[in-house]
Image 1 (tube, helix red, strand yellow):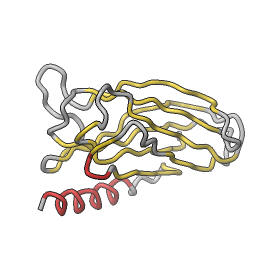
Image 2 (cartoon, one colour):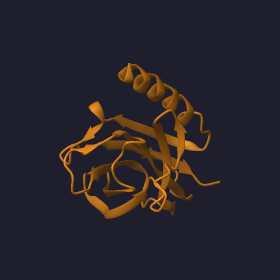
Image 3 (cartoon, one colour):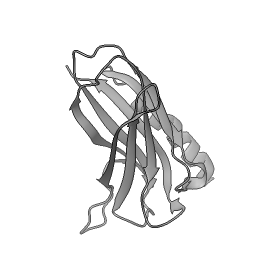
Image 4 (tube, rainbow, N blue to C red):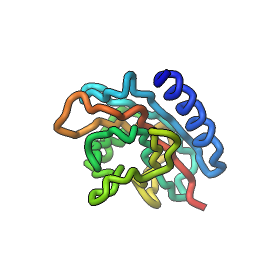
Length: 157
């Protein structure tokens, strides 16, 4: 029953996430059984055509209320079309209130969706394909109760 709920909510989440008009790219990687292994580094490839404008990039994270931590450390890599790493950075994402433990983000049942800023007003150096690779950087492997990770790229208006 729980797998059916998770599947239905994942479909609803995808539908809601895909309704953004500013987005030039949205990608999501479902994490099997909600266990994110360090070796599992989802990649999201998108095309940038207009280098005269800036872009905002967001993390999309889905976790359950049973996630054992209030935060999530992610190492992100931005690669160009040749596979050259243009940027590598570790980010701390807050998924639950550190004092109360109350889940942040939008929730439905025991699942919560987060849209957290990764890069604001970023100007890509040239047109072409880019890839963002995400790797969980927590001390626990596998990291439980993470059911989806993704990236949204939006053109700033």
